[in-house]
Amino acid sequence: MFVFKPDIKMSEDEFLQIRDFIYDFCGLHFDIESKYMLEKRLNKRLTHHHLDNFKDYYYQLRYSRDNDEELSTVIDLLTTNETYFFREDFQLKTFTDEVLPEIMKKKRGTGDRSLRIWSAGCSSGEEPYTLAMLMLQNPELRRWDVEIVGTDISKEVLSMAREGGYGKGSFRSTDEYFIDRYFTEIDGKFRISDHVKRLVTISHLNLLDRKKVSLLGKMDAIFCRNVIIYFDLNAKKKVISCFHDQLQKGGFLFLGHSESLMNISTDFDLRHFTHDMVYQRPDGAPGDLR
Image (cartoon, rainbow, N blue to C red; front, top):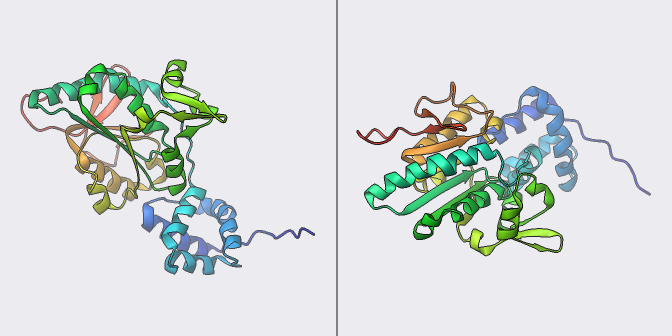
């Protein structure tokens, strides 16, 4: 006979302990209004570990040998990984039609034929693979060394990204041309072609881990769209500072359409293009495009 087990209640002190620990780990911020959401979503973790209170779960998070794995699971439960191919296409058009030609023109002048793009918070991979498809559409880039790095803190979505199989919901903004050219339908899912995958590296990364972020090397463009909305002001400043350091001088930062650097950073110029506005790390060299 099935016995209903009511949810375990979370005290305010337990909420503050768990919330602050998650914040220190990855910068995700939850205000007191989020207490009920944390309580509901984390109850299943108490059941999984056979715990009957959140105080013990806090110690599980903090001191257990597999706490990194548990924290990764918690992040999956508390964040929304809503994404799809060719999201915010007006921004992608700005990148391919105006920003990318500017980057390439500058690099041709130095003899550099490399292009590095970072999709920070790549979720299940739709964004980095979209960028890869767009790069493959540019004939000149066939002679360039192109690398697109997709990172996320959630190991679950990264596993999906590496697999590269997608349902129809991921194609709500995708032209049939790209589906026909770069995907194969297998067992009801559309699998991304190896030709696209070869341009993309998928890695686990905490954006607040500055030392590991620095190992990525310099980037020509960073896409971090609809990610910093989960951070408080202090964490936003840390992440944006990391992006500034990782960008080449003159490199570009793409945020979500509802995000801005107002009150966060003055280290970027805001460039006005035909279809969108994009942040740029100042070059500082005379005669270079700004």
